[in-house]
Length: 398
Image (cartoon, rainbow, N blue to C red; front, side):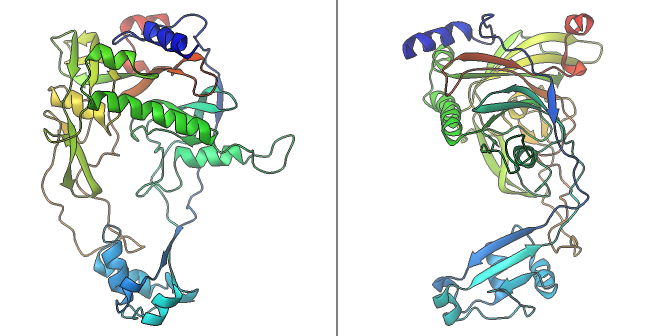
């Protein structure tokens, strides 16, 4: 039976086009959920245990060494003097407080309390495209971050999912039994389909789907082999700068990281020494008058910012992309010049250089087809297209 399902999957997911039978087609569910964001978030607390290797360090040394990307030395000094750090529940305001041998032996608890702050504006409504006992699939708006990170700790898809799961039901006054979590990421500026799992089993199987797709590319299989071995297919729409002369192109440029100001773990770019990645691009419509091209992109691997990097690598960056330019590299390589002013909480100010989360481009996760991780049914889900990413024919038909 499983072989039969996979055979069906291969038949319905040919290269660069997503075709589904009527049986597999899913109607869009018109439903929304979301709660408007409070003015301030609740702040954060970071817990650490003093280890034997920390003996003799001053408090400010401990935090600056371990969390250098969070704040400069003067920023940590500001936080300590602002009574934001405790040792075993007691506020400490002297930065040169020594982490003694006895603290290490007892496993003293250090807690840094990050003050509540107003996060940058972000949308909050999520459209439900599909839902059952195991999955909830939402249409993520551009400008909303998927998981906490940086300045966005509360204003995320994950938070809205948690709040939605905790809404009182007719059968219970508490949270629902399921706790949906996203199983993959979309860039903050990217809109469209986001898969979220309601159970651990569903999450682990979907994660395996994505990992299998990327591993096939790493094994350097042919395009057709990659296509027949996948259990999930993702198709995007994008608007790129320039008029593409080819109708179809397969991009196999590896993606790696470089040091970049404001991005602690490094910025993903086109790199010969990076990890394998594969994207299949098909032209949908050319616009010579406005010097742009509407394209469809099917990704065979899931590297961060893959579509933005790959399209810019071949000389057709996304219109409005503030970060990536032709060649799959960032616009600015200049080191960030830090001044002596910090945020109210002592942390670094927002980088002046563009960062991956900056919006402005048009990229939409339009369609996804997959074998349901629990029921093994073949399903297709479509997220409505923004007008700017529709062909003339699609706009006239709507």
